[in-house]
Amino acid sequence: MPEMDQYPPWVGLIYIFNLIVGTGALTLPAAFADAGWLFSTIAVMVLCFVSFITITFVIESMACANATIQWRKIQEHKVDESEALLNTDSDGSTVLDNSRPCFNLNHKVELGEMASLYLSKSGHMLFFITLCIYLFGDLTIYVAASGKTLVNLSCTGTNSSENFTEPCWEDSEVTRMDMYRIYVVLFGLLVGPFTYFNVQKTKYLQFFTISIRWIAFTIMVTLACVRLINNGQQGHPSLINVAEIPALAGSSVYSFMCHHSLPGLLAPISNKNRIIQKVSVDLVLICGFYLLLSLTGSFAFKSIDVLYSLNFMPAHDSGTFMKTIGTFLAAFPLFPMTASFPIIAITMQGNLKHLCFEPHTLERRGFLVRRLLFPSLAIFPPLITALSTHNLKGLIEITGSYVGVAVQYIIPALLVWNARKYCSKYLKCNVHRYSSPFRHFGWFLFVLLWSFLCIVFVTVDLILDH
Image (cartoon, rainbow, N blue to C red):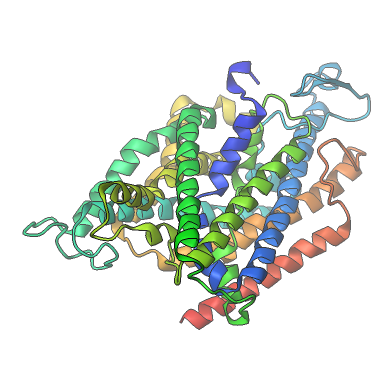
């Protein structure tokens, strides 16, 4: 990989942080308080831990895929064996091995390509359908949520109104739906072009949004602490509320989601030494953010809005400073969605390419196919869907529950299980430097059991809601 396409580990960790901590973090405090602060604290930490397990599964599967692709090229005499077995890893170390290819993360191997390597044709197709539904739903939600946020910020009247047929402003013929569609088009024009570049090209956008994110979360935590100091404890959450446990699971199931985009974020990292440990630090920081945000909010407010940032909306008699802070926090969800949209769209186009073409034939495809057609397929369907409707509740339920469980838990577990069997049989390797520390079969069963429990909780939540 050319040096200019690489970035240091801390940049990669920023990308992962940005991808995970999005608008989902703002929906946690309400569910956290309703389910009981003690139980929710434990649940969030368990969610973080299980997500870390499956992240290590993805990393191990990616390393196996790199070795498998290299081994197949050797078998097909597409790579000179003497060159293939002399491997310079991303941390600068040279690995000599006369029996098997090197396990590394140097080349981006999307989840779709891993599925084609290690799953059956039917399994590969089922994986692709599942992942595309998730990514398509995610992108559509981001576009629609951005449009609705901008409508609530710019239009007068009741900001929480779902009646998009009413005028956006008094004595105006422009409806809220008209403005919503204008904002969706603007989102596509301003954010969509990043999809036509590599993820490295979004570096400055990522730096900007993580700065905004730190500022917003710091303000929310600070204001909640100030309320506790000045007004005392206002919220009185129970230790555990069994009736609200399904809702917590339903709203938290993809709070730590980043698995679908990991290959594109890890491959350009210049030094991948101890990458699993570095990612674990990222997950601990994110878990700390979630707990700090949720605990302070649970005790500072009598009731918490579904979107936590709305708890900080200023009253009509608030001063200019507090009105400015409130407006900033209300607009905050726009920033993580803007940063995550290109990464997710790039992931989607990568998987579409590997479904349509053999990996070794991609470079032979023309510029129009590689750099224009597939990025367009990734961004235009979500934009068109968002233009047609602003009510995506059903899609959000499917995207964040059943499909989210499959992408975050089930798919990584199945990939690593089959990758281990393949590498043990053909590459004669059971353990390598990127192997997950959770190699025991019990961890595989634990992840599947956790997935089943999450699906049960989400199903109960959906039934109770209806």
